[in-house]
Length: 326
Image (cartoon, rainbow, N blue to C red; front, side, top):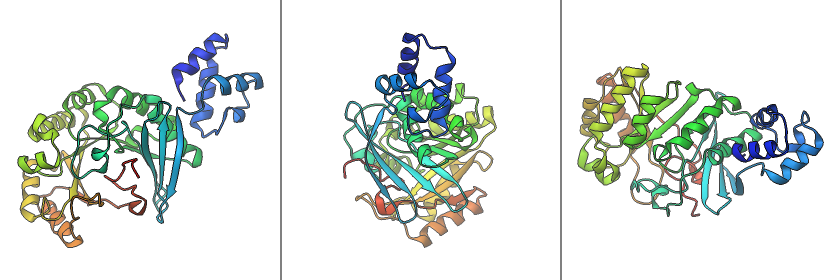
């Protein structure tokens, strides 16, 4: 839903200011249409249905994984594709993976989104409408900005959408923004965001040359600068930074690679999330044994480490697989 258009429409009709709040409260609770908003006059519901589209996005296709993960392909009003994901866990978590751009201009080589043609930044309403789509399906309680795009290339819209997520049942402490280390946006996040929104940094290699091969952004914003900003975040906010590390066979998964990663991280400041590689065509994923050996090296160095539970791989909904080209 476009809040600006909603406000303009209500003002033009001379409606009281509280009407916008009523509409949003119904929407955030999972209402499927204006017709369900029974505290609004029927004539107003009909007028809003004609003047303000209930969603800024059209649903093109939806697929459900054997593990319960749901992936939705959306299209914006001007034709740009994007995907978002609902992940269901046995412990009751319902986590949504949100896209901040249609495509991504940063071309990380292990990520299918990087091979897409870049479209544009998404508006705050378009990001929020991804979350609302899944909220209408069922209650949700976690969100990760880890879908298509680099969130800090679209920092204003990302932060604006994140401010509204608690109304859907997703607290700031259960919201994570993931970045490759785009420094202008990262600095703004560190300086301006006082809410306990989590920060995740994609590293994927401690060696500068290897990281630049995997992530060309490293040439522009070297890892040492990114980590220095992360340490500033830890000092200001007293919250750990999550490190994302995709495991690629014979590329970044040796015990020596693990020692190099441990050497640049402090246990008090960082927690590592090892990500089994989800096939996108260019690499082979590390074996379970290699991942466990890597994790053991980190733990011996007292670096907290976990292995991400893969969800939705069979429908190309797992980390790094979103592409909107299939």
